Length: 101
Image 1 (cartoon, rainbow, N blue to C red):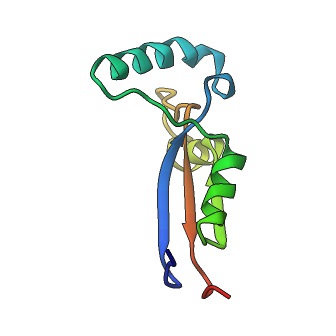
Image 2 (cartoon, rainbow, N blue to C red; image 1 turned 90 degrees about the horizontal axis):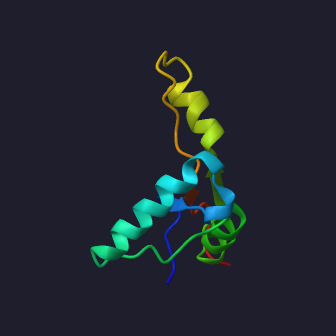
């Protein structure tokens, strides 16, 4: 498969349990159990390094992991209630800039 220049891929991905904040692990465990009980188990977990490598291997040459910290700075920094992005789900943004060569 080949993507045309300008194709953009945006996706969230889920970090492995040991890569999320300790304070979020119990909620994550319960969420995974409930999903599995409904027949939709979570089966894919990626580190930022793994997901970047996979997206590059798929043919995207401009790949950026958007960290939780960046999301918090951009979207949540002015919130007085302390709401922040969770650590367990992160974002990847990738664009195909060049033709395959």
